[in-house]
Length: 167
Image (tube, rainbow, N blue to C red; front, side):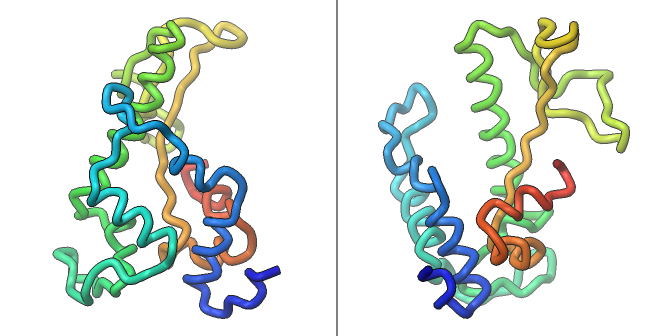
């Protein structure tokens, strides 16, 4: 297996993620703007650079004080990164639109509903789904090459998502 030849943890995790089943399906999506499937040139550039494990930016210091390497993956985990919230909301919109297109009414960020850890779910269906209970969802985007997940990402593709505290 080629992954065994990659010694750097970052590149091994990148390779395993890129080689996993369905990881490239986004490349096959038709660019339909009305469905939210049209990516601008900069988004495609960043996605391809990250997928191939190339440098994305120059070394710099983040506004949170952390040192950002040329890979730029710090932006996926930084609590002060402006893109982190927008990515989360975009993922949440996709889930809500999927329910809507299936004819299932749903609400994002339902009021008065909390998990046992005090966090609120991102959405909920307005009709019962199974056993009289609605579907509740919480969107979490995991970066397989973030320093907090790199160990699990080098063991097996998909382990970063399995090790996530949100699951």
